[in-house]
Image (cartoon, rainbow, N blue to C red):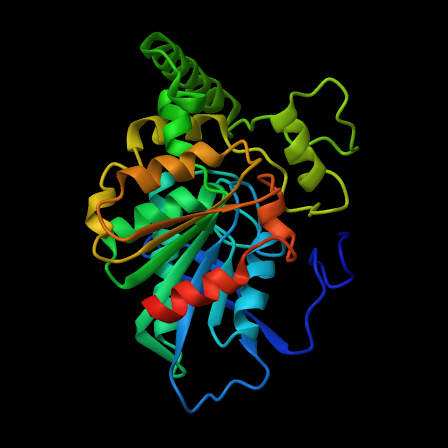
Length: 317
């Protein structure tokens, strides 16, 4: 895929209408989002709604829009958003990552859908892609208005920051990380602005990269999913919030509402979905897509199990 003239990484289907909307979350931050509906939608009837969040560092013009468009064709009112501090959404300083606020952004999406006269407030669900998978589950734990939650290629960002990749981080590593973040805060104070992690490179070249990083570059740096507002970097001092948070500590609070976890049999992130499926105390279904890598579940409409998503939300909502 390449960036289309309208600024999206996919073409708008003639069966679908896309409307740019703005609303505020409970912190007063203005959220930029796209509302997708079928062009033939009967607006005199109330329909189920779905809030869709992007991968960590992604934007609404990428994977969330792909999902929203497909689900709109199937009769859902779908909202794809940019998280606070990122994309076209508000919030200063730019490129903050916050587990609490990113979860709140899902609830703010529910708020907005609930103001629409053609959406049924009692039939709203959510989908989180990659890092938003963890944030959507976190939101569902405390917001019972989210009646069903699905994740695709899920990452638990807070779990990685707190416990390390595949939960192999040692306590001394975590403490060293927090010391480094504390030192960075002084640097930010002296500089008058927060420093960012390294951004994605301008040219696509996977030479010398580990397989996971190379895969992300294939999507975010190459034409396939590149977007100028999706740069891959967050403020360095954001890290401490994730270490202290633990987004999935209360999964039991989602029950009896259902969870659908989609992953690929070749996805390096597969274990996140398997762990949540094992820990869930309520209805939970794990779908492992044959031949799918992590990034394939961002945009490959021939691989993403939209029939399963339609079935799940039609039953749950």
